[in-house]
Length: 433
Image 1 (tube, rainbow, N blue to C red):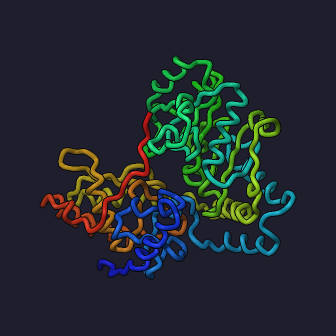
Image 2 (tube, rainbow, N blue to C red):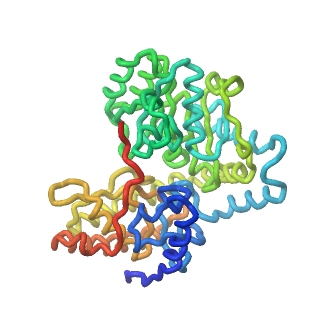
Image 3 (cartoon, one colour):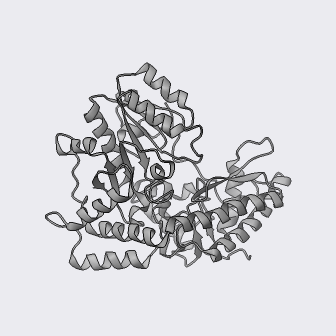
């Protein structure tokens, strides 16, 4: 595979202009150029189709970022586009309720195990935050035990390094526990037995639950009168149609969904058992002008039906397995200390240095060499979609093979830094207490 000869002049020009107008230059920190190899990656994308994207300079890439995982079927997916365009003819946001709110809610209660009632939002942070509020209202308690990433709202962001402007007192109400370490959650309840309103967690991170971990969390929350909330923003409509709760057979009290539910359209969902969701009929305030916006609801209806009818999730697992196993095979053959971790539907290549420690520098070089060969991926994880087919997988594996050979050469000659043509990516924030 030939290294793509690319111009990135328009991307760089736009970036210089936007920095004077938009703080941080981006609406989402995970999309900013410092999250990639700046100077080598494109900064602006202009159009997309299927699993391919095209930057403002006309360069084409096979995409594994997929709108930060929000595009599960593929860009410009015909059935979803048609549903959006048909609804657009009738209107987007109405003065009163719209039947699509009912239709989508009914469908969600059929496919998500814990869903007896449904409310809509726009972002993941909307529904994780209202889930916490519902739990506090229902239990009369204030403290929250959390595991994973849950958005930008005060209750969670106060625990990160980006907590300026948030009252420090909130931090005392939010306590982290560690994934697959049930003792860390048990200690929270030992120290705050009657104060914890909710346990909120990503049911799957980049490792599988071990030793019946999710079931143990479920039991501990129930035994202590706390609500269990699954943050399924990432896992929903990807691990299984009903999310990780369906895949692992553990049902939470409430769950937050987003990203893949509407194939890239802005929609998030809070679902849960009726006895808890009915708090939203009383004094728990959650109201949004755009909660019933119809284009996103039409997209959600079409997306879920298409996933059901086409067996889309099985396809994503199948193609992802080829990438997962292919990377590990190539790394071994080339002689690079690297492995694919995570899951076929959410995979993360990890590179290690001579001492066996994870090396972001080596990974940065790998990312640089793959994007030069037309593969767009991030430093955290990769998320195949239904539109990725054997053709794209084969091209990706070929690009990976060539990139791994460059990495091997750089590592052997101790020239990883010298071979970097752009700036190393940075973390959005550090979680801290």
